[in-house]
Amino acid sequence: MTIPLPGASLLLVACLSATGCGYHRLDRQQRSAPWAKQGETIRLARFRNLTPRLGLEDRFTKALENRVVAASPWRLVAQGEPSRWVLQGTLESYVSRPIGLTLGNDKAKASAGSASRVEVAVVASVDLLDGQTGVVVLSRRGLTFSNQYRVDQNFASFDSRELQVLESLADDFAESFLTQLLEGID
Image (cartoon, rainbow, N blue to C red; front, side):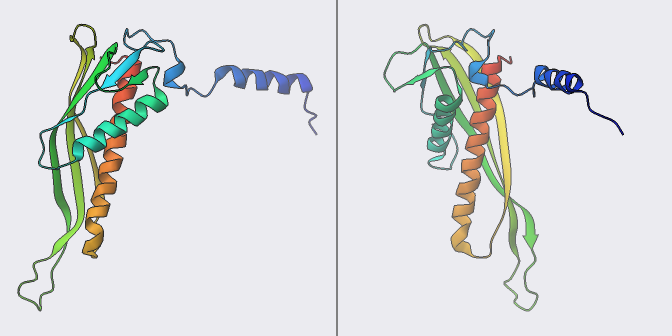
């Protein structure tokens, strides 16, 4: 029978506590990037939408705005106000394509089948500008985000599923871009 030693368990707890879990909030770390200083102001320019999908720019702008407020060292300022930094983005492409098919009914001649699974992909570019000089200090081109969804045979739900996927893509984009920006990855 082994009797645990109180000193050994305290040492084990101390070692485990010292190593940490490896996760840290990005808005509380010391940064080497000049744009990632606590308390500076940032303004989000509305995304330009070069895609045929109307309203896509609103979703991406809002997702980035929410992420900046929730997990960045900056203070978000309204449009038209001066700021130390400016983020501007462009939605370059939007593609929605079927990747799975349900075969049609062989008894009906006009029945050719329909999409059972759809992939949505969005490509965006974002620039971080010095708000005082207008110089681009960081640029990310061709950021591609995609997601898939099953098509319900109830056609009334088709648009709502696609809208859910677009919300998810906008959130993924905002989180990924802001993480790269705050970590100073060039």
